[in-house]
Length: 359
Image (tube, rainbow, N blue to C red; front, side, top):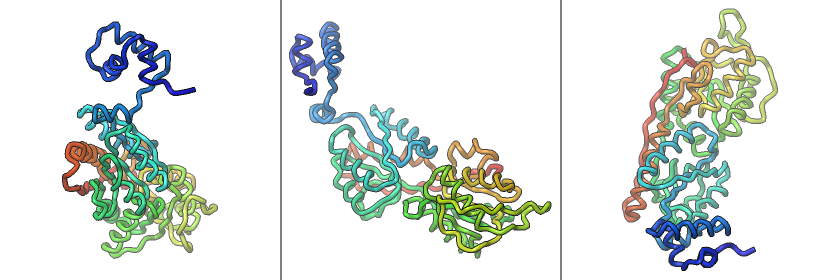
């Protein structure tokens, strides 16, 4: 069955194609004409072609936000900030998920040529040369909420993850914690790379070596639990508690984590690469009888709503997700208005939100 056309709507409504176009584009028309056209549209199931319409009016007044996982609280915060800015400028925001595969990210960027949006804010989990090339060649303006090389020549907004890690390490040291472990997400991702580098630099700057480092399979709660099991199964009992209950129960190494070698003492603190991983870890600590923060202090990153909702409330590094979303939206609107302007690279500085998961 062929797709309904404007001409078909015009015949069904008994009006001209020009009249249908006026109604569909919101131009002045009589009530009778509007009613007839709308009735015909509903009966035929006509859907306006976004590309054809954009060629006529110049813009769709629709923008896209693409993130790896719409269920991650940090992306929800970013989405709200983007939507607030673009809606005030008269745009509708469409949110889509790219998933963790860079191939899907590239496909989404190239798909922007279909003309269903006037611009794109993308927060890529993984970046390669193909993605950078597709962004540079995209038919609509693109802003990257993440870290890409300056040579890419695109507007970017990113968090200062290394400084955030330094805040976390120094906070734990001030609380008397020195046996610090790190629970990262996949290291081949943009945040995984940045946070691993920041953790290593922060520990070295303070003359420390990590008790253990574990790499989770994803940045999710479930992956945090799996990696937490590996972290604990690879550690010996430690004198963390006065009553002697500081031993981590031996268990199987979780499939969600990699990288712990040998058996070492139970850490007195763990920094997780995001809040979802941190909360997953806290569940595993509770399962083996270790209390947070009495036995093990825990620090997350992102300072999402989850940090306040967890028990105990989670100390977390605020990487400015709302600020990044707001600034990304502003960069995109500025790029739409003037595509010749020099690309900007903005870095949002972190802060630390201290809660009860650290003493």
